[in-house]
Structure formats: C-alpha cells, structure tokens
Image 1 (cartoon, rainbow, N blue to C red):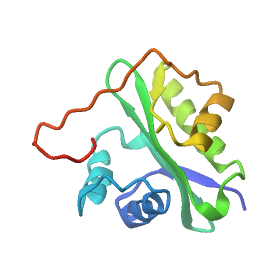
Image 2: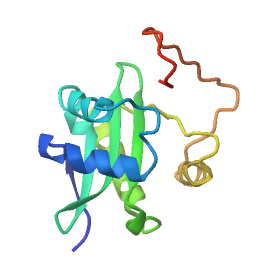
Image 3: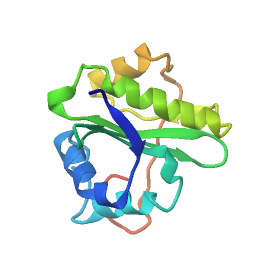
Length: 147
C-alpha cells in the first residue's frame, strides 16, 4: 500500500513531534514548545499541514503556511527508514497542489546552510536559491534561542 497523505489531526501531535525529533528539527526548542507549535497550527491553515502515513504510521510531514502574500513551506521531514524513497516529493507535490487550489502560487522556504541533502532536494524540485537574501531573526522575549 502506498503513502496516504492527509491533513494533520490533534491525535497526530505525538507522532509528528517524534518525527521532528528524529529529523533534528527540535534542537532550538524549550520543553513543550514543539507540541504547542504543532497544536497551534491546527487553528491556522490546518489543510496545509500534512502528514503521510504508511500502514497507519506517520512517516512524513510537511507544514505549509500563508501570510496573505506568499506561501511558505516548513518542516518537511521523512522518517530515516523511508528517506530517499520519494516520500518527500509526494508530500511536497500534495502541498503544492493545495497551495494552487487556494490560489497561492508564490512560495518560499528556508533550508539550513549545512543541510546539503535539503538544499539538493529543493533545487532538484525547481526551487531557486536566492543568494542575495539574508535571513534575520530577533527574539522579543529576551531569550537566546533561535527563532
């Protein structure tokens, strides 16, 4: 049976959090921040936060957001045991379709500079690196954590 892609549900929060931990996407967070981030997304554009299941197990996730101007792709993660099998492309294809269905055709995403696999993945999918853009962050709560 192939990958089943659907919108995130509240019951998926622990599985998504675990997948993000496995993918190294939680190193910046304080305890509870990740679950809150996932839960908060259920209230805003929930149709753009996707999970992919194989045999009832969440093995992939991708989060889309819309700021009124551009769509953003965040947190594409595939379980280590299923990487390089096309699941990331399937998840991205479905998210892009949902963006288009909503009339959102301009997309952005960020990739950490040392994520060579991620940089290659997005370039192969037709996304263009914008070397003239710099990404700034600022915490308004005086914390030292990365945004």
